[in-house]
Length: 371
Image 1 (cartoon, rainbow, N blue to C red):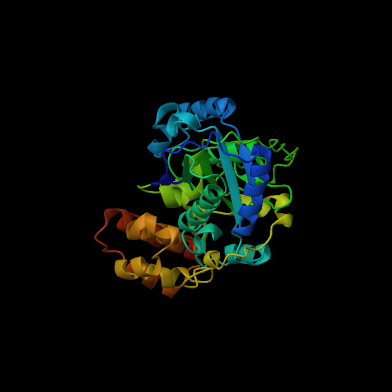
Image 2 (image 1 turned 90 degrees about the vertical axis):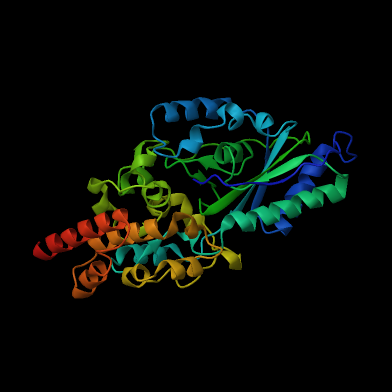
């Protein structure tokens, strides 16, 4: 859900006269992608008319909340050649990131004293990992055909990564709006190379959600308001990461111990029985964030927060929102003198946002203790 600066390389040399047969080159690109650690690479054309209509409808219903960047750039988001002139094909790649067995992940959610961080954010910032690999893939292509026009994206700039991945055959967009692969589930990152090569597109993936509604039923805040429709304003990932202000009070108790993101819909998805653990050391947990307690993390001052989250996607929320989120989770924890003491230590925090959530959490603790 982020929009960061992208990595790019736009040589002026045209690749239109490249010697290799395009079908042969496409096969080579997929093989090189596998050698670089991607679990799958596919190729899409640039026709996103259906995705464009759906995006316009979603934005028109204000379901993007305060993610104003999703409404910027006009049709550049859904028309790749407007964003990167000369784009003829999109190379889409996915990389697994699941760092632990799902049964262990579920147990972490069930412990109210433990801080739950979405599993994609436990290790090194995925933007950096995938961007470097995609750059290496582009250089492999250059080594084969010479200079060509391209630009690399990893959850960055106005790119419709999931519709493009579906068109490239990497999976289908499920009812929870995540991409699902029939052989690998949904625990993977996506990245793209926009290029001026006329590569043959892969067949798009077909939808296999059927009548299943497990993700809809499990959502803690009922954010999946209809199949394939997510109201970001209700989504815990949005509330804990993208939303800059106060978390709506009626939703706070529903956050449980989730302090950064939410994985419930993926845990509930039956296709994730095929998910595999990541082979990337960069995606394994750092600073024991997969087992840290709420009280431990709430004690971090800003310097420690910045030090412990260096190179992590978590850093982008900043220390203030970090404390805001943990205060809510502490308000949902089992009442104890330790929890009350932890909250009281932040009751005079300089940030009005933090103080307000601490006050709510203290009140919640008193209500829970009296229940």
